[in-house]
Image (cartoon, rainbow, N blue to C red; front, side, top):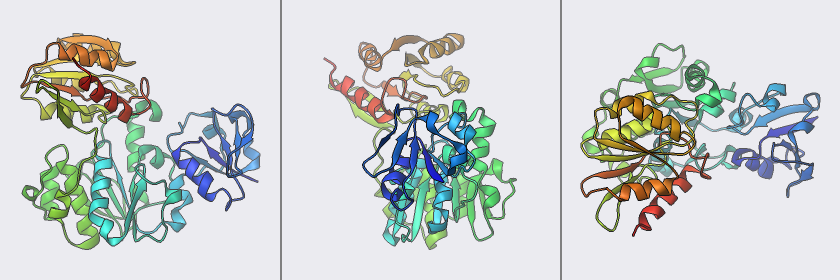
Length: 403
């Protein structure tokens, strides 16, 4: 019987390279393969049409592999990456939610790396390449992974607020939300969940720490926000990371946390040759993240670049919020027409640019010192770019290249 992998992304590639020989070789099915071939490790690379369910005893999908795909629908022995490695997984912290999970995961690793914790999952190292002998795994955990996971569970599950995202993948907000919450019922009495207050009624055997907001979580965990240098929207991320440290070690290391360096592409401020403020927030790939960026600069005139792959989300709340701001919109990407329609409905000044570089040039023609040019697209980048990081790089290069 064959052991199958669906998709040839980062997760399944690591499985193939590290575990292929141990498993007797994988059959890897991907829409990008036109004919049978072998990879450098002896695994079979096969077109989707070659999959035969009755000849496969195991199917592990790449986390982002869509549930509507014919391979998923035909699979009989589907198992997530988390379930596959669950028996070998040490104590683990899973961090999820819509926005802030990468930062929270990185902050938690910064705090707990000194005790031998290892970070992976949706950020950093795939599970296949992680050390099963590590004291603790800190895993950024996506809704895609949770959708496919049926057995694995963490000792600590830290959940940031859930807002609409990836609706075209999940089919609805309710299904997206359900994926994020699915692990709760599997958790036991010796585990802990940190989650928004609205989900405190959910059935789980674990100890629950439910919070209304950052201040509420700080009070419940005995933390002191004034000792933390990070401000909203990163304050909640920092408090959750400190909460995880306090649960694991019984202490909260404020000075160590304050040494954490935020990664690029998140509210990254820089100035052009004329001293005008530009902000690269390309990682704001959903409505809630873009809203936080707008709140941060609400006291300024905002030149706002928005658009891309909207992932099936309406974005009406974002535009309603902008009614009360001094803002001009520059619409880009495949959703540019949709952004223009929202702007017209809300009476907000807008320009359809299509291309990011054109948006930058258009802003530069009128941007004044004291105003802000903000790239916080509320959308994914793959309609025009290889990644959100490439979008951010091109944004900064376009600003740098201004006359």
